View 1 (cartoon, rainbow, N blue to C red):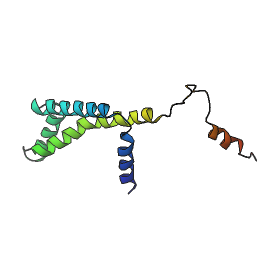
View 2: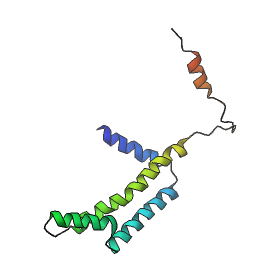
View 3: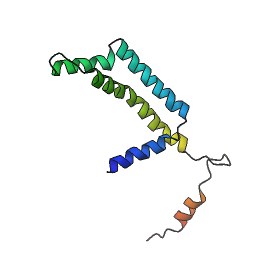
View 4: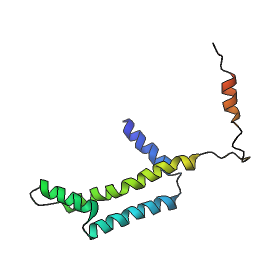
Length: 114
């Protein structure tokens, strides 16, 4: 059940990355997949050959296409995941990054040392 929450939270977090970046990465993934499919090379070829060796010389077009597209989509998902902290970082309105948040100061000043 927590895995579903993690996926939902990633989907929400990914929305902070600008759409043009997400769309560009999706386009690059689709172009890579289309090239691999059209020229029967790369991950598409590897998956087709793997299926042919398992299923007596046959491979399933839809399954091969889906799996190879997921392989091409994986780097795009990882890049978006790495960009999320960059776009969620809060900027200090004064522009001075040396200033510590006042709430953080108060939390540390109220702690008793035993």
